[in-house]
Structure formats: C-alpha cells, structure tokens
Length: 127
Image (tube, rainbow, N blue to C red; front, side):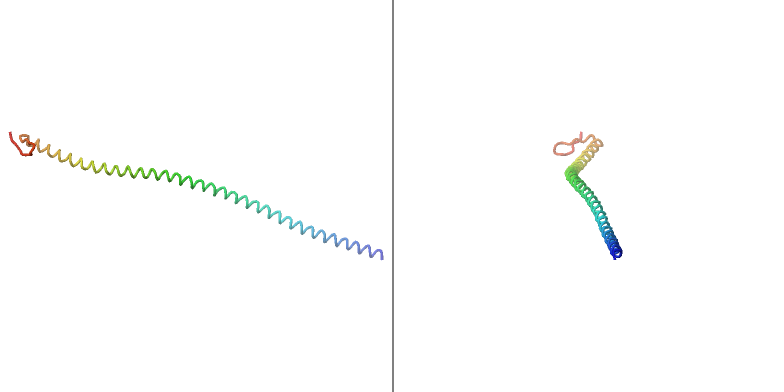
C-alpha cells in the first residue's frame, strides 16, 4: 500500500507540476501580450506626438503666412493707390496732349499764313 501511496503522491505531484507549468505558461503568454500592447501603445503615442509636432509646425507656418499676407495687403493697398495716381496722371497728360495739339495746330496755321497777326481780341490784321 505504501507503493501505491508513493505512486499516487508522485502522480499528484506530476499533476500539480503540470498544472503549475500550464498556469505559468498561460501567465507568461498573457504577460507577453501585455508587453506587446505596451510597446504598441508607446509607438502609437510616439506617432501622435510626432503628429502633434507637425500640427504645431503647421500652425506656426499658417500664422507666418497670415502675417505675410497682412504685409502683402498693405502693399496691395499701396499699389492700388499708385495705380489710381497713375490713372489721374494719364488723364492730366491726355488733357495736356490735346492742349499741345491745339497749340501745334495754331502754330502751323501761323507759319502757313505769316502775314496775319492776331491781336488780343483775336481779329486778324494783315500787314
């Protein structure tokens, strides 16, 4: 009977060792999964940090563009004012050009008929 108790004790010992090994393996597998999830979370967090850095950089870039755009708006306003002045000068030049044309016509007419002199009342007097 002592042999059968020793066999039973040995069998129970083997059973407990096997169950213990199985539980230990299951726990190790679960631990490996948790380690993998932790590494994946760290990787994703790192990528989100990088995306945050990119977003912050884009925000700064957009603000710089907006600032430059504001400066460009000032130049566009100055260009519009210059364009208006140029249009006004062109109108003055056009008036002066017509006046010069009228004067040239009068001078040509005077050279064609040099014996006529005009008085202040614009009547023609011949010599």
